[in-house]
Image (cartoon, rainbow, N blue to C red; front, top):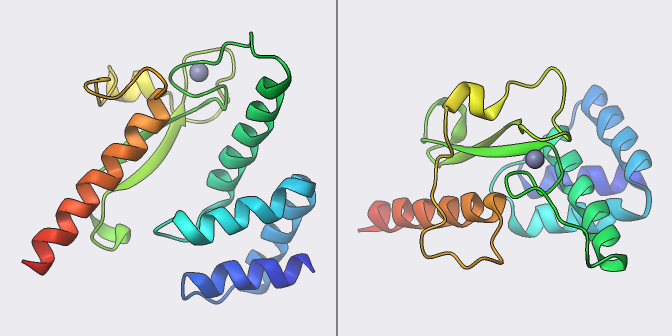
Length: 161
Ligand SMILES: [Zn+2]
């Protein structure tokens, strides 16, 4: 069953999973348990590229976090990483990104930070995007996501013009 879901995920992005990849992603599904299917469905519908395991882990983490919040509305989450420990940075189209702006994850400065992942604020100094016109319901990862959509739509429009 999980193997089928993984093949479907790779299919959706026009890729064929090697045995090694299949193993890794199936392991991830086992870890994600009941959240796995919905995260994969979401990725198929919304991602522009095949999600990496670390990206799927980020989604899993925020799913678990938002579930927790559901039970405890007083929980306050880290603005920069939503308690996932990862802060997104938007990179210009280049190399492997197939001509679109793409996100890479860096480690947050809060207590959820992951060891071994380059620290966002060490690498970039300050946050890439300001809150600007985005409402306060938008945490930083949302702002970056919306900027990515905006810039990629702009690219697409330019390409079609
Ligand atoms: Zn954080």
